[in-house]
Amino acid sequence: AKDADVPWEDEKFIYLAASRLPAPARASRVIAPPKGGSGKVVLKLCQPNGHAGERLSSKRDGDVFKVARRADWGDTLG
Image (cartoon, rainbow, N blue to C red; front, side):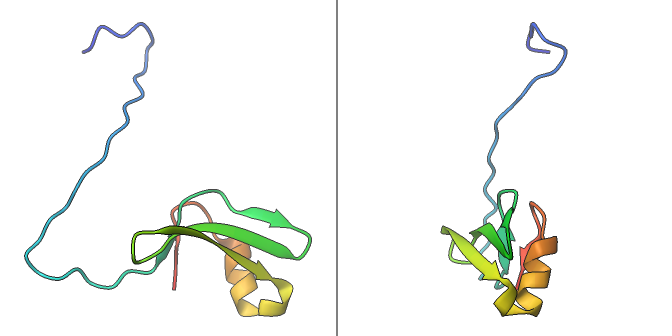
């Protein structure tokens, strides 16, 4: 369609959704592959306020650590 030299095209895109009603509260979303280590997991998250940040979970966190260890790119966390 664009006279590309390769059999695929990598397009970067962004979209905006607008509404007159307030948006419902959202959970944090994992925006990068988790980084695991010995007894710890670091997740890069898009927070409900729109800012990105990292969350460190260790074995001491119990159930939170178990959820973080199984989290994948795109998953939501409460």
